[in-house]
Image 1 (cartoon, one colour):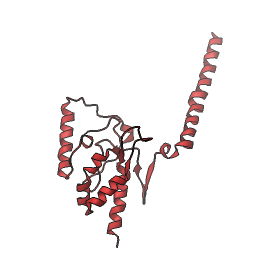
Image 2 (cartoon, helix red, strand yellow):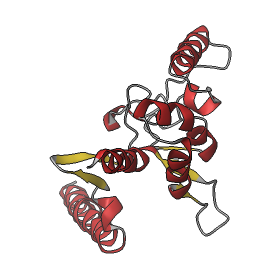
Image 3 (tube, helix red, strand yellow):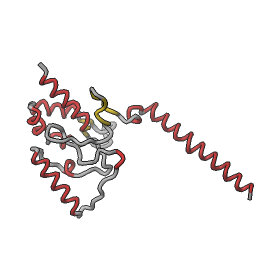
Image 4 (cartoon, helix red, strand yellow):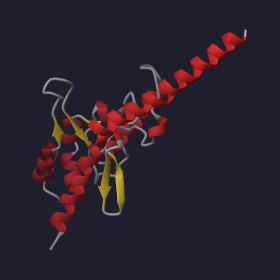
Amino acid sequence: MLVHLRRAVVASVIFFVLLGLAYPFLITGIGQAFFSHQASGDLVAAPRGYLGSSLIGQHWNGPRWFQGRPDTDNPSATGSQNYGPKSKLLLDFARAQVRRLEKEGIKPTNELVTGSGSGVDPDISPHSAYVQVAAVAKANHLSVSAVRRLVTSHVVGPYWSFLGSPYVNVLRLNQSLAHLESATKAP
């Protein structure tokens, strides 16, 4: 009996050291060595601190800013609302989003009306960004062509030219929009 107990304790200590200490340190080291920007949260700097993480979607209020998916901006609350396709709650939520976007002068797209599977998606499709150009330009007193060029400059193509779809990171786009706005208002 004592022999079995000793073997169990030794095995537990070995697995704790290997899987509880060595493996996490190894993976953290690899992440920091090869993907340090992402592993550190890909924080976007602002003059007075940080604007947020480009890996997590944020809420942007009003037509002055490009809107992302109606997800949460709390990374601890990942996961979608899991409404089924026939859910009245999903239909009510989508209708409210459509009314809000139309009120701001934005043509709603499926992406701007429904949340993502993760609940924290920071990106939208180029189409969803382009449908917002006129409203954002008008709200910021900028030319439509300047805002359209800004969106075009933020379109990221598929990984290795064939994996995934093109996308636009909303936080980085809005950061550039703020710079564009301040540059046009400078004396």
